[in-house]
Image 1 (tube, rainbow over the protein chains, first blue to last red):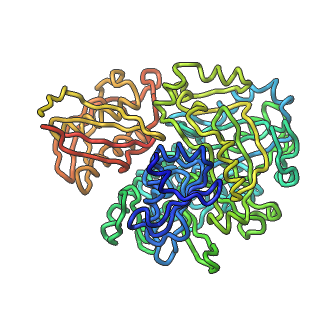
Image 2 (cartoon, helix red, strand yellow):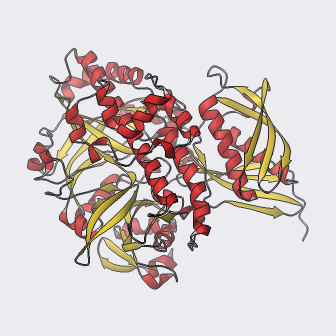
Image 3 (cartoon, rainbow over the protein chains, first blue to last red):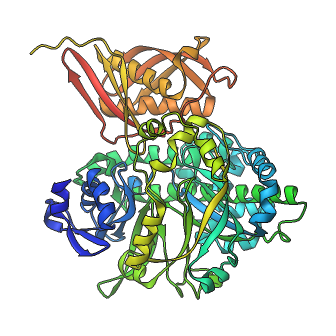
Length: 485
Length: 144
């Protein structure tokens, strides 16, 4: 740890620089957003080494960034952001991750805690029944291969066309819920087979569906534009991704990239950083396949959001419109995107890898939906199941500094095994119940793995990005009911 | 110093976001078989799997360590898509680039098999396959 602390240059209270000369081969410096306290655990894990390794990748511009929720990942750290010049840069599947477009969607309601409390058990049971979840969960929508090919090209729109949701949901989804350039011909038969039965499922692991209560509003005007108006208001957060489909796409292309690394003579400090030039056949193929997986994830969250609305409708005997069940926003946490940014005063087209990071575009940006033009893009930052989640917005500082990116969540601090040991067989479900959180999970050993102490406190994470100015916190909500796969 | 290795098949190692396996074998065939056993011991209780059917598998890759990743990924895929659990692996042929095996097990039955964790992929991260005394040892991190 001491070794790392000596290497880092403190720029201010929330910015730590890894100098370019830390290791021969780094093309840019690294930049870690963290408080002094958080930095200690970050250094203990040797995660800065991974931030430095990413700086080796050809075409990287600016900095190799790490958000405060950073933790050790495969090759790229989770919480890492790296932008590569499209002309001479690379694309790396490891910079996106296995769960392509793992992300979150937030719905609001006009219901209050007092209205939901008496029916919380019924609501959680209804949601558990209505939203397929758990290990190897299979969806209730049966799709043919032809439909699967449409789904991965159209994304969330595919679901809306089938009556699962509304056109207006697409307006408040990153990229309208559809990443361009998706090509089913770049997808293996295995990925299709893994994906077909899992479309419209929550999955397991850290994925969840949460009924939340607004606890604090920091920016009333901004919050009101998102429809968050009252303390005690009920929100619903959906956290899931591209399931086995995304994993197979990543696995398939890591194999392709292993070959590409030697073909193009790319020197890497870690083979899990395997990559190919963006303009190469391998690079273009991966981007077309990644878009398919991103679209699969958006379709997935779209289906689930619809079933959430249906469940509320049933329990409260009212239609979703009357219950005010509008979508606030949907963001990707694991993705690579072609974007234009200004670097050293000149406009540059870059491929921004965000792995466990959120796009945080500022007010007025062309890719921010019309309804949010004035406030900036909503950023959704879930915490662990026992604490809280935040809603924030993107800022100009993020545009100027971090390629319009910010943090994505809490970030693990304990391995799953260590988390289980730390709970020492205590009943995690009961502990949550005693704090007024109703929980239903497919597996109870999984609950222990996902216990609060396994994660950093998301409040500290959000404080760092807020103080650093790369996003602005708007509201905080606490869990009231949780469904884990 | 000569260390007499107590015959271990595999160990499970903790990794912050995921889980890893360390497999041992007196030869590479046994190493591959033990790595597969370790995988299924993470997914369920291996004793709960009965040998009711078998499946012939062929996997190819470029290099022995990549072949090990491919082998485990093939088994993960079969569980995810075909819902088959295996508990015995007869490695018929194993070169640096190719593996042929017969795998024994049965279909997943939710009443009988308790699923412990969902393993989603075998990764190249911190991948190691080396000689270990008279035998072999491999480390693989799994994404869960």
